[in-house]
Length: 369
Image (cartoon, rainbow, N blue to C red; front, top):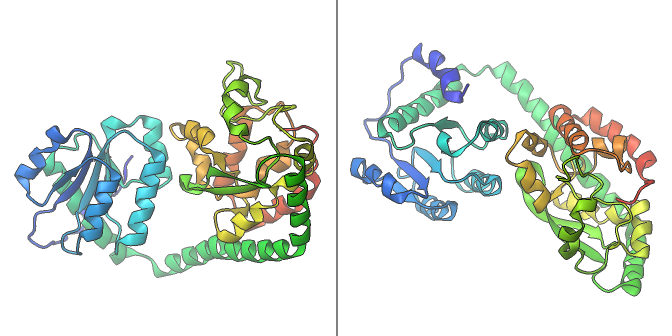
């Protein structure tokens, strides 16, 4: 049930009045010709092809010329949509309701879009202007209804919970990562020198990873593989430790990986290769505890199904699957993802503390992966 259908009954019990103005829309579609009839109904409607054009229009708009709705009718890309949503939150004075054309999505994608709060509603016929006008008035009424009926006590309680789960967690991350970096700085320098002396390439490896809400960031690790190891992934995928019965794998890890250097093997077995991620934590890309950020080629395979829920949790250095399954080559795709989803649904400061306490005993791995 969508947000629209859930709240329609409540809104019908109250009457709201709006300014006598016709709503207008920003329409993102790859079928410009079909969308042209929007202009025939209201000259303020804009029809564009992608999110970049949308940003150009929105950044120039005033409070009176901002669209009442943004309607999207292009192929779903979680990364692009999340980036666009973040941009709206950072650059506009208020959020504009986003509606997605239901015909461009499957049922799992719709579920995940609502889970991640990337859209406000879906619509079957995104070219029906009267329905769009009705939706626009609905969201205006919903906003007024919510503000008029918000329970102050409940709001205060939720605010405290949010502060504990987000701000205190962040303060802990900053404190521990900052102190940790200072204490181990000489050790970090020694490891970097050894890596440089024993193999070609940089001491610290930076790759693009997807974290919470599919946010992409530069992920730091001590380099444990030969230079340009990423280019050899395709040739080795069928040897992945996470291969399922059909030979496919959502993750890529393998035993006795030939790309790993001698010093790299030691760093992996002791998890010392993870130490540079303290800088990611200090920057705010990651948390100490969370779900591991994934390489983009792995994350992309988890964005169109029910697995996308794992991305609701913060990205972390250590997490639930690391302390319960780390080093086990027989772990299936499903086991790892279910552990990630379990953490995403039940993460708390208390649970984070338990994971941190359990992490040292899980650091020594029995398998290279």
